[in-house]
Amino acid sequence: MVRRASRQLKEKTLIFTPFRRHARHQWIRSFSIGVLALSFLVHGTPSLAQATARKLKNKVDPVYPELAKRNNISGSARVELLVTPEGRVKDVKVLGGNPVLVQAVTTAVMKWKYEPAAEESSVIVKFDFSSP
Image 1 (cartoon, rainbow, N blue to C red):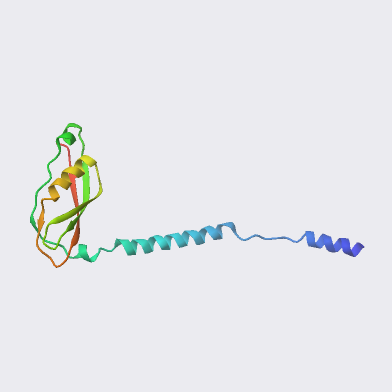
Image 2: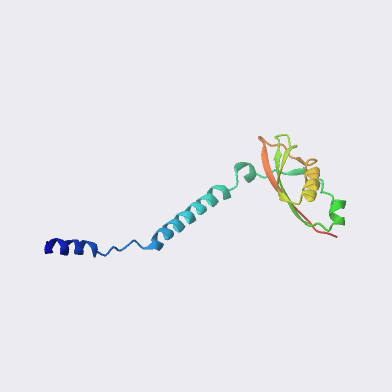
């Protein structure tokens, strides 16, 4: 009976060393940095349509809106244009900016004409507006 008690005592006094707590966090951090770098490589490269720049034949500058002047609105507006093979602007996708400024840019770029090309292409345009 004495042996049994000492045996149980030994089993209870075993020391358990847990894994280092920060090791998992380092693995997650390394993994997330790798995924982030990979996404920049995939999405950061320009597409074929953007790589072949189209020559602009007819450009109409956007008019600084009266509402923006009265409210001292300044900033930039970014849009992406879808240009047909004939050179007309088919679609305008808003990428960012104040809605008042974006509307002025959209109205202007719809009047633009590009040189003809073999296929549709997309062009990203940024306009900076400053209050007078």
